[in-house]
Length: 445
Ligand SMILES: O=c1ccn([C@@H]2O[C@H](COP(=O)(O)OP(=O)(O)O[C@H]3O[C@H](CO)[C@@H](O)[C@H](O)[C@H]3O)[C@@H](O)[C@H]2O)c(=O)[nH]1
Image 1 (tube, helix red, strand yellow):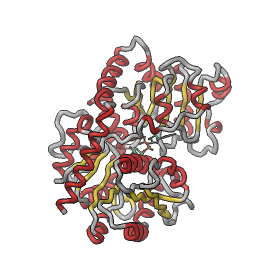
Image 2: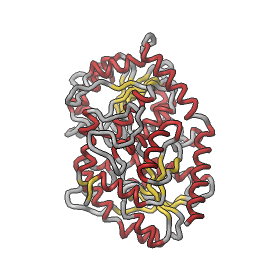
Image 3: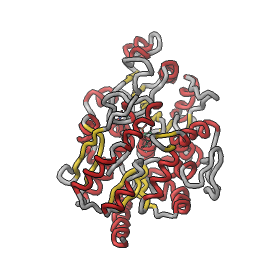
Image 4: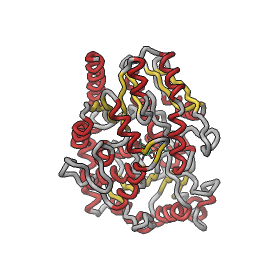
């Protein structure tokens, strides 16, 4: 396993490794170290079968010292992290040579992996951990800016829209030595097949389209979340605070591992949670230019809703156990950025879903969730992308208010989909199929 240096990528690769190890397969996992490795090591449920190999992220001019993942750098420095990834080719080669022989390597952004696979004799395939919808719309060989590519699924409402088009320009930017688009298309094209973290029930039309476009078989792993039994317990401090509130009443908000908000937007969102009048737990990074969360708070905010009103608000700047929080019975609404991991976690939770996407794949995921699947609502933004406190509070009320028709519809649709996706056997069936298809490919080589 050799995922891109981003927590939102490494984590699902670890969950997939755990599932494979549970079936007796041996996994070698290359990830940035020492800090990221130390942070994520507890997720390894089968240390006797899964070996973590630290990759020293080489220093590239302009990259902060010690930066290992996208969580350590502001978004404008991400291209330098790709340059650092490309400079790990020798470390990759020596590690895979040392531990070999290998059957198959899963990777996502290191476009030179297939070349090494052919030299050393292992199969390679990208393991895509963002939605097949964004792959189909933006990352197929015939993709066109501002338009749907030829032959794109005709009945989907996941189509280019102004903010999506604006954000999709990122694919044309240089990330390391090549554009992000070329990097991804080259990576996928070079592999013997492509693996995707999705399922036919959710994204079948997009997967089929990607297979046609790449002329390659797609091996689906299903959602790949940790088993409920395997999730670590929720710390007493979170459990005690959440348990103060009635069932389904708390609004939980988190925007993943990368999102960094400007101070005025950060303050406006906090005002929005204050305005909606419900208990809330917000997990964000300190806003841009602020050393602490408190430094970015609106005037009098802490006194009013953290210390006052019985401590109705909790705002946290660190890492929280999101899956366990979503599982807590008091949590009734998930305000998310629609990162692909969070998207799955919201779909498999009991929560009402409110989306505030920013990056391209998050906007595409939001269209899939709100327009095709109709399981949640999106917070309306103005033309500059600004989210006002009123719009945030309105969206929360739209799904949380008992008399809301939209709230009823999205709850029903979500429930139906969760029955399919949450079926205890679905994940196992996908894993069985995935492993069978791997054996099949290996036999043919
Ligand atoms: O305090 C926190 C914050 C996050 N998480 C977990 O971290 C993961 C975050 O993943 P995701 O929701 O995908 O968000 P990002 O970290 O923002 O992910 C990046 O990578 C994703 C691909 O996986 C893309 O879809 C996103 O746009 C990109 O920002 C999820 O499993 C969360 O449960 C926690 O456990 N605690």
